[in-house]
Image (tube, rainbow, N blue to C red; front, top):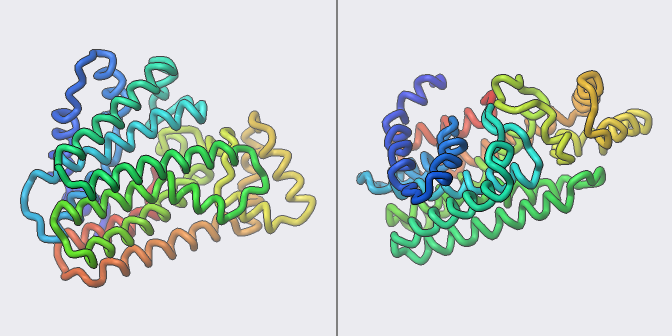
Length: 324
């Protein structure tokens, strides 16, 4: 199945989610509407709410109420983007100026808070304590992940284990939570809920590793931000961690010099990329991500064949092959 066919299969769901995002937002202040319009409706993939819808359907849910409810995942995700861009001093998001650059730091923080509160309000309206607990756990984990990443900024001795814990908290827990809440929404058995949580965890881990690879290998115009952004922000991601650990002394010294210079040139970046490839950082990260994709797909083995399962399997496949 190609990407066009996959998108065609989920287009109705994506359209309904897009409508629900606008209808559920209900901002009372014009500034909130303008900021959310700038980032929330700037071309996001809607992966997280889509996963919730698909997982609910895979567990036998046939209604439409899950689509507006699934907006909780996109609101929460967007809130973290607003806050993360400010912390990271990022200047571009989805091919547009980051919200804090356009509207100011205070506005970006407060609108992020609004989106977080909106997400939790919608979740609470369901009256399901287990869903509220999952959302609280997600929020806590994501905050911890951001703090851990902030503490590790610029640390050249960051370990693979530390990196894995950061991406688990920052990315995987939200995707995992969306899948789990979809199962709960459908009143699935504990076994099915756990299977979909496992799928979401491994998909989230692979998704972030693929994202970190794109920071070194993607085209700027396609990615929507400059390549090398993570490096300029002092983030040590897996391709770089592995290559630096394996590099010979002279090459390791050159790599450290480039990493420490936030104003590195295009030639410096090209040199660094060559060394990362030479010492296997790129290939190792791809293999690790591919392993998580296999685990994600295996987690769906107990579910009977159906269109939702097919789409979930294809989403896992495309997590590695995406260009942005």
